[in-house]
Length: 372
Image (cartoon, rainbow, N blue to C red; front, side):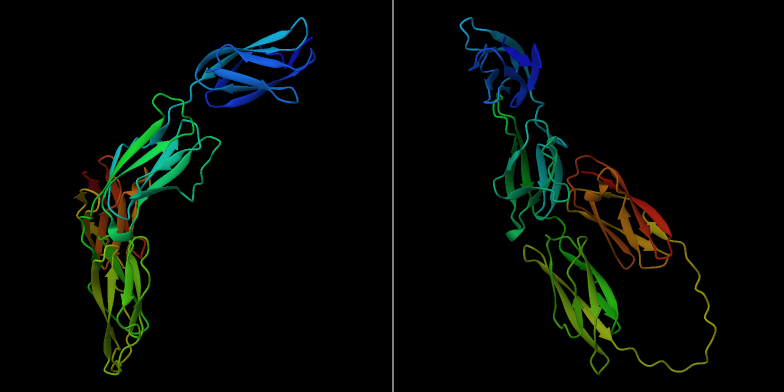
C-alpha cells in the first residue's frame, strides 16, 4: 500500500520557500505528484522518495501523490501557503538630507532575504562591517555614505528589494537622498599655538567636508598627525632656532579643497634666574562650570559653542550614548571652548545631554536642544 512517512494530512509553507516534508514508499514506483492550484503550491518527488513542496503564492492547494499501480493509489495533502512579512526598514525613512562625507544607519527586515540594495551612484550602501548580515533572520545593519570625491552634491535614490518578486507591486522600498553643501565653514582652532620644544599641542577641525588632509610648512619645527574621527589633530613641537623661536604653519584642506591654517610657534624658554627655594603652595581647586546650560542647535551641519569655566584642564566631552544620540552630535574642546556640531539625520527634535569632565574628575552637564 502506498505510504507517506510521517503520515500527514496538512502542512504550511511561506511564499517563496520549499520544504522536504515526508518520504513516499511502498505502492508501485514511479510515483507522481499533482497540485490542484499550481500557482499556489507545487511538488515533486526526489530520487530517494522525498516529497518536496514548493510554496509560490499565498493561498491553499491540495497536492496528491499517486503511484503507478493498475488500481492507482493516491494520498492527498492539503497545503497552506502564508504570505511573507512585508519588507521594511527602521527607522521608516522616505527622504534624507545629508552633507558630503556624512552617513546614516538603517536596519532592513521582513520580506525574503537576501536583500538587493542599489543607488544612482552618488551614494553607496554597504553592510556595517562591525555587524555582518544575518541571513537566517534577515537582519542587516547597513549604512549609506556619500562619496566624498569632489564633494558631490545633488539627489540620489536608494532602492531596497528582496529576492521575492511575486508581489503586486514588487516589494520595494525607496529612499530619496538630497546631498547639500555644508552650512558650517571649515575652521581650525586655535589659530595660533605657542609652546616649548619637546611638548605637544592640539588643534580641532570643525565644519567643511571630511575627510581632511593636514600638512606642516616646516616639519623641523613642528609636525601634525592625521585627524581623529572627531577632528582632533595632535601637534608635535620639535625645535626652535638659535634666536629662540621659530614657526611652522599647519594647513588643513577638506574634501572640496577649502583650506584653513594655524601658526605653531616654538620658543626655547630662557634659563630661570636662581632664586631661594620656597615651599610650593597647592593651588586652590575651582569648581567646574559650563555655560550656558542649554543651547538650541538647528539643521545638520550647524554648530554651537559653550564656555568652560573653572576645573582643571585638559577637559573631555561626551554625548549621552542612549537612543543613538552619539550619531547626532560631534563634540570637541579647544582650550576652554566646547564645540558641538550637528552631524546626524535629525529624525525628531530631541534634548541631548553633553557631559564635560576635567582632569580632576569634576563633571558638568549641559543640554543641546535639536530644533530641525
